[in-house]
Image (cartoon, rainbow, N blue to C red; front, side, top):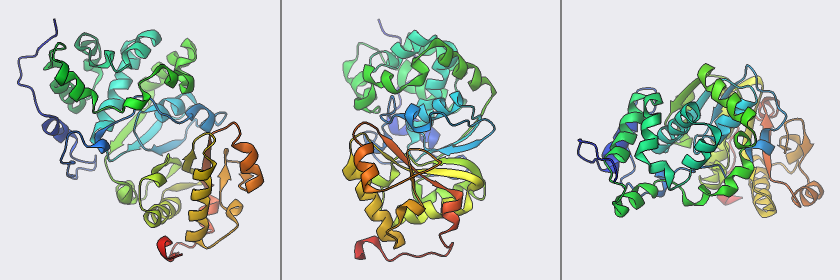
Amino acid sequence: MGYKDDKPHKEHNEALELFAYNGNGETLELMPSANNSSKKVFGFSNENITQLFGGVDFSGKKVALTGSSGDSLFQLLLQGARDFTIIDDNPMAQAFIELKMAAFENLDMSEHYAYMSRDEIFNPHIYRKLSHSLSERSREFWDNLMLDVDNTDVEQKIEMADMLSQGCFTPRGKDFRSYYESKANYAKIKEALKNCNIRFLRAEYSDFTRVLKDEKFDLIRLSNIFDYVDVDEFFSKMTQLGHNNLTQDGFMQVYYVFQNDQSFLESFLTAFQSYFGTRKTGEYLNIKNIDGISVDKKFADRFFKGCASGIFMTKEAFDRIPENFESAPYSEL
């Protein structure tokens, strides 16, 4: 028999109001529908984070990144980073990442993997082992959505599950998760979470530069935001972030391209070339790693036979773009 709390069940919108400000004390409007797709989060990343950052030592580095599943955070903890600003427009992101962090703190590796399935994540008995590790806002959010729900109420469970992306709660996610590769990796993240600084900010991409102010980061990770926003806005804000928010030796992951999706790579390169008025993308962009294989079609043809990739820009590359640069609108080129 499922557990029921004495408190009345709250609608999702009401529960999400706990996350209606961005961490700088500014109130943001929530999306009107609880089933809006922009409220969903990924259970696991569908990007190969291990490959993307493999071999780079981030010890002592400051990182700003989008939230989503939290897997980038955990991978970068493995690689030494301890200072994070997680910035995301999704009000679910902080709640979910904190839940995943609490699972690291209180469960062993096999329990964690089992709990991160779509069936078990709503188990109130397991949740009770984790809730004490959550922040007050996240605990109230999950209490309202979990402890008020009788597990025999199928409709309620489906409604809650709809807030999580269906595509990534599958065993295949384990292939990309270095924290499930070994007990040693899992233990290292568990320990690192005790001694790190994690700040959550809520903002749309267009507002990233404003909420980050003049703070400098060694890595800014944008994942594949390019696929979801206006092209002109993407490159304009990307350039501002590169000028204002990277350390002198810093770099930005500006795009992620999935395995064999050469057309996505080419669409990004075409947009980049058009916006900045250059055909020499190799002077600005590094593909796969930060030290530099220049982008060219021969390389792309060979590379995309077996690998996913990240596209990076260094601070030095951003400095070659004038701060007052203004492109003609991409749609007019």
